[in-house]
Length: 514
Image (tube, rainbow, N blue to C red; front, side, top):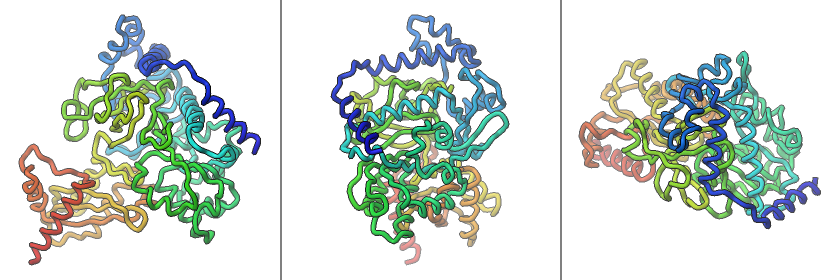
């Protein structure tokens, strides 16, 4: 194992010394798009939109972008992917789909079903190898490559649904990991397949001293919980007393910044933090340079990118894309402009809005930071709570309790080393049962949003409800100079806007009680 670690480290350093002939970002992306169209031209989708004719045209890239409409999940599922779930082959990619990744819930169902093809699994592995190569840019001890890799995600158990399997993307990847990797993979197959998160945590905590972990991968909230439980259970001061060789933390999914300070307190010495960009739709990139805030997009791995300026010209107030939005390819983007990410992929997604909003920190290095979502989401710890989820919860409260709620907004904040939500609800109902409102909101969200249900057992510790008169919301808009039919009260409050709102509510309460 020591020899293996030194060989990997040495090969990465040697590779770094060589200069490889590289194509331009545009060349890579045009090549990817051609391969996608060539492979999918005889699928139902490809024949419907004339991929073969597009490829034969003089300006075929432009022709593709003009001919294929923008799709969100609902459109792609309703028109095409539902056939894949029914067992139909060659719908939008030339194969019968064997795996579906379950992603964040919508108002229509608990989970989205995202097709995962053989080509996409190969692409995910390719991006992983590229990330391994990029490790040469970081000051990582050679012995780290011979130690265990703890991967904390959803359950690796997949559910058989007739002709296909569904489950977490992490579970699908685990089912397809190379045999050579299994010797490094922690917590191992038996623990990872446990469907109960708390049970998995207990087993990981107890077995932690048996593993020599150098790399940890996972969403910050989950990793922090595991570290805290390990430290508490084994009576040590920090995680390095259990895993002295821990040197790398690979994270993604949510911003790490809210966790950074509390995370550092769990460590006994500095480690390397590396951000990745993955979703159920694929693996898109990773932080390739130390001390640089930016994720480098991989441009030659089965995904064609377009970027739609996230502004009023292209999106409405609810975050829905308008007809015929202006999009840009990778070589056309500029820095510090917000863009919604649109993908065409080797999993049969075509001009598909993934929902993320990004900014380019370096156009030259095609590096981005994720700045939000096309729709207002609240995701402190991976709960991915959308406006649709919130509206469903409020609607259920009104129906079950017989009250009218005209306005509401939701805020998230750190709470007892974890997180909490606070709902501000506007109703003129007399003495409403706040405990009951809270219960209905919590139950409804758990039913319509799988991620929320999971986080309520881990990082999302508490839900608070504050009932206010309806006039409070109107008065606040008036105070901000935004009174009128065209101005809508924000459903999610964050940052300075949240502080301003809290101050307003506090002052109003003082004046009311005076």
